[in-house]
Image (cartoon, rainbow, N blue to C red; front, side, top):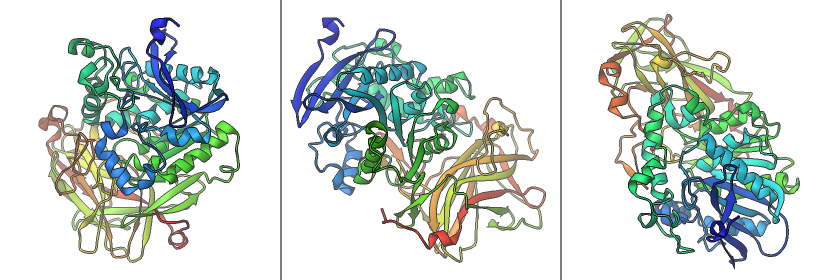
Length: 593
């Protein structure tokens, strides 16, 4: 490696660690990526926890994401305790808490981001190959024991699924914490309906630290260096040196090679997995965690599901202990803390909210009572019986829709698992975007919302489907998880009735006696009805940073017709709910979280 390539690299001993800033990693096409390496002081060989991503390895959590840091550490002071916190970084581990446990922590700025040069192309096959190369580089370093684990949230979880499918020889275990996997169904489109997430997120969180923004970007509070590297590019050069994700997604409205190249082949994901999901992550990550657990070829895999904010439990003592025991087992060979770990660990959600821990053997739960609640459009009810008479209700295809609800539950009832809706609809136009919202109503009829992964006011669950994408992949579909190939558009004949099978992402709620479940069918995003909440760059109204509100992608002449929901014996529209038998509610174990 040339002197020019190593000139940025600096080594120090500080805060009980040997730290290398801007370590040079030469990947397979000859590009030099930059990494920070935190390891124990002195000679030795240790397992490696590695992350590769675009958020700037030198941007402190507190500086880049101050709102989230304050919310998290105010609610959970344990997160900030025992660390100077100056090496805290968005969605990756705190080295001050992991290096003393005998781990090397490696943070790599992804190609074209932070202090790594190159063309920025989020989630691309090139990034996945770079991550493969970084894993193999770390395994060969003199301070490594040759076993590399991947651990991180969101972006740093998504690319774990991708690279695991390439099967790097020295990748020993992965912990994708709240990590989407399907680029089409989870990141870009929901049931075929375009999500604006990529167009919102990419310029704010990625372009802001693109390599070359220079003084227009932040400085590191630790090193004083520019987070996005010493190179200073013009706006024109920066634009030419990236693939803007929002327009790229819009150019690929079907699940084509663009999306498939950014999604894993589950048959090749064989590494040990700890997959960690969030009940409130509607719109992005949790579907990937469930699908990964169910579909990955790995023989050794575990699922954990929790609540609260997207970032919180990754850093709490609860989350770190879970991660540590997993990695101690697979990277150090210590089975004392993981040998009896149950395949599934759930923080079952109650109103309050509070969470009660419970161990399970599988997902979905084998004892689930898949319960159908049928729509009666005549009186707006949901009941276990198919209505005797046919009925229908109509709403504006781009409007707030219609609602159906159960009678008050007579006894406390647990709902945990995936849901689905079968709706018989007709439209006055050639298509319709159908949003399905599952809500919890208290005895007064007021909705109970929950802290979501991003949004502080989320409903129980959400599902989506563009009617022209209604075709099912029968080989992958189940009654409780319909799977749509999204490979062609089948327009509607106006006023003709069609069956739509709609996936609703998994949830957990113990419904108190006297409360009701309601399902809204509408043509627009869920809004909880209160004032918007600003967190970071996003304005939250109930659906998080995942709105589907670009008029050009939902023109009124196609999606704004009158939509009718049909019910009754000939059109048994219904909601499938995963009811867990009452005997299990009575024996909930563990401590509330």
